[in-house]
Image (tube, rainbow, N blue to C red; front, side):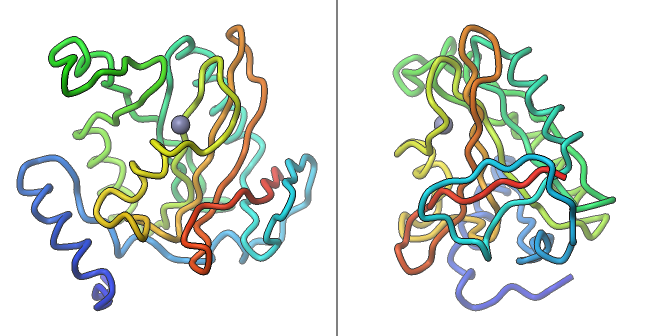
Length: 210
Ligand SMILES: [Zn+2]
């Protein structure tokens, strides 16, 4: 297990606090930056964005992407969410239940949005996936969610959720974010985003399916 770097101490402390409350596990050591780029893969499909940063392109197996599309369409009109862990031959899609509707019903003041425009990962499933990745020594590659009836953009809410512990830096800066747009129940578009440390923001990048 890798020792946490000094820069992430504050985040880890916050995570430990949440973990104590049963809300968020620490899996920082499971993150291995740059693992996507170690695999030479043949490109069949490519979603390219303007101003993309080639060194940060996101690679994923077409079979994994097909599972995301299926999940996003099945969840419609609600958002779906989950992770991709591993890369190449070890890559696997790990869907996580979206409990936003339950929280909205229980406490609409604290959770004004329902799952049509928001997602909240089930804490137990979230924890299980991250612990599993850590146990197997697999990197967390992607965090994904869908936008029913909306385009595939990274919203201010998405950014806030990704930077829960520090507004200036994502909780997991080396993990790509994927947003799938679903319209009329059918997959419409996808966009990949990575953290740009210079801009201090997420930027759209290229998604390559192999
Ligand atoms: Zn979103």
